[in-house]
Image (cartoon, rainbow, N blue to C red):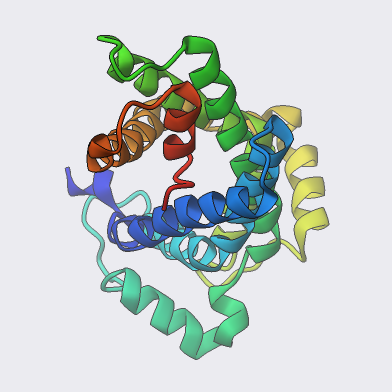
Length: 247
């Protein structure tokens, strides 16, 4: 049963900081940009996505390596890594800073546009759904907008994620298959065809909806209740809170 939760330590440690960075940077970027337009929402989101790569890349490397450890065994005979921190320390001792940042370029290529679409989709949906504070359906609306934002984000860059995961898993067992990003794309296409770039997409989208629905709704509702004494807010004000510009 514990095999289903392999590598959970790394996301639990990293996601708190990642979400803090993403919502904080996006909110500050929107203030700097001034106008609340769809293009600015995309730019602010993309900026946030680019900056959080510093934490996201090592975190996902540790998660991938922990999940690969003992693959195919009911009980691992020999564990190379004790936990996610030990995994990163061992990689650092063996390969240095470059080792713990393996896959950084593909992470950057994935995260930058993905978070742009993430906040853009949420902005468009919350406006279209008409989010009003007195609306009895506000929570379902926020959950739907957040969930669909997560799906749009993953759909926009999922092929890049496949390559990133393969590069980060490369070298497990001491054998390196890929020379770089282009070589990984070429070998993957030759061996498995174009469908390789959609492998695992269904499970990713099934995860993306509830995770991002919860994230966006929690941030929005928390900020709403923290500022409820400031008087009534229209949909635009609620939208600003949802993007954490009030942070």
